[in-house]
Length: 265
Image (cartoon, rainbow, N blue to C red):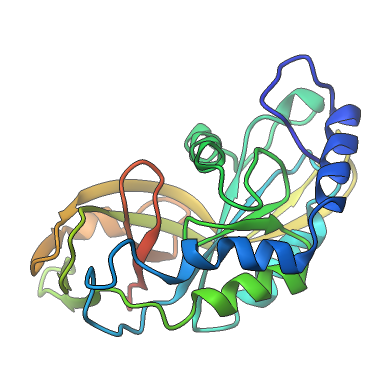
């Protein structure tokens, strides 16, 4: 399903338009056009460290989207790869079809729209969509396309992210590296597994499973290419429904994700 940002479109025409759009792009075209976005910093000297940062795979999904369950299952498989950080971001714009997504947030919807405004390959406001490192995207259920984008993103330079657990249960996050740009540092609270019984809508009667769903997120500050540390108090690591936490380092304005780390707590 695809929602072009035009309020007059209904779900049926949105899906038809999306299918036509995707038919016009081959996997090879997507791979070629996003390679610069997900593999190369704006300036080759921006970062000097080869970091073990995982590739960030963001899935925009919805309980009201009949095309989404295969993408949700793909996210579950991808999450087993320790070189990836899979994040499920349920969106709100299909709630009008008769079922309000119990996991969705407006923040996820706004982020997807911001990515779409960048005009990267595979961009747009539709579900299911996977965005790699805040750059190129693909239909979230097309595993071969998604894995092609992941391969392009692996091995990209980035900052070194280290964590230290304090005596009171808080964590100190240190980010090191060299860069010519500023990036926002965010903490995400994630639920590793959610199961939802859908009562109405396109998936009515189905039981759906979700992986690493965003429960909350907030900014810790900025990284400008010099060593910087952030203290996270213990109370910020006990968000209701969350059982894991991740650091994301991302250029402003829904830009490229240059670093990420799942906290070992």
